[in-house]
Length: 200
Length: 217
Image 1 (cartoon, rainbow over the protein chains, first blue to last red):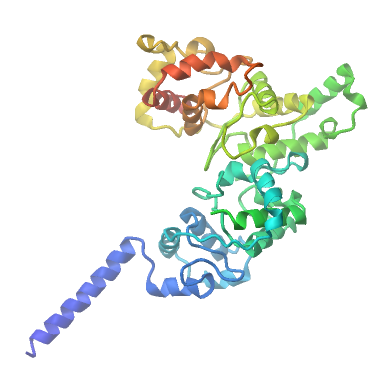
Image 2 (image 1 turned 60 degrees about the horizontal axis):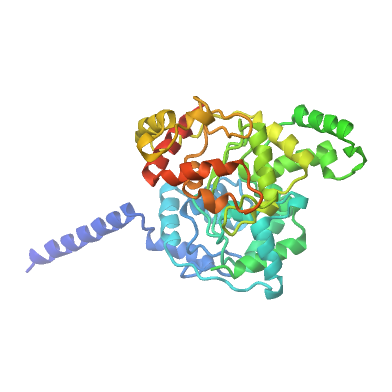
């Protein structure tokens, strides 16, 4: 009896270690990493208050943002704190994990502004030299690669992010967004944020 | 990515000449000012890239750098007159509507930029693509592309340059020719000449040609 127990224990421990390392190899974040993000972004990654939905987001986009927050090249003091222990591998795992969760649309915009928001999304505002969002973010606001999915993100988050750029914060973002959002008026931003919050 | 725009005197000079000879001088809209042109160029760059190199995202946005001036101007015209439309939920006619003077100025600016080719097509298809480009496919009634587009795919006048075009863009165009072009039933343009060619190609051959072109300087 004495000799069997340690053998079983050792086997169990070895299996646990093996599975943990295997799941890490397969791109699964650890339970601790997942909990750390869900504190703010919600247990199912659907977002909460000012923390945007991560579920269904483009994995390259998530990875890039984690890197930018870690390097302090994207504004957001909350996220600076959250990415102190950033590593390329954990960013990759976290991004893969959240990108695979089915996103739910927030549906929290102003319904009266949806029509205007859709028109801006699809055709831009050429008179103000505002590019059509759909050209890069896709006809269904689904994004691809480094370009984020916008469909179904919460009105508050979209409004805040566009306003951020409009007020010249985060001007170093490596994309056309600071320039595009600079031209948008607050009303146009509200319309876009409203429309997008309903897009599945 | 470098986001400092390049100021070009050439388009401004063209505008100045246009306005002095064609009597547009009375107009005070955006097209007449250098600032208006700069703003419009930045607008084009948002999608087509700082060097007009194109972008392969959700939708393939074509390279317009090194494109022939006449072709760029003609496409802008086609979009604004709804002879060309990508048929997706993007309002292409609205996006590309600019004044005639602006068309020429923009075309001239982007035509003069020369970033390196994307080289984003599958390398293993390049040799097949080169053969199709240079010899056509007689048994399928496909003429040699080089016959009109030139031996180096540089195009001329309204016949577009194909060299260095993004692989997914060329694939999309050849595979969707009549869905995008000839939208205006009574006022067709020169793109009609490509209809039978695109029709006679299949996906495999399109991919080969597109791959070959994506590497050409």
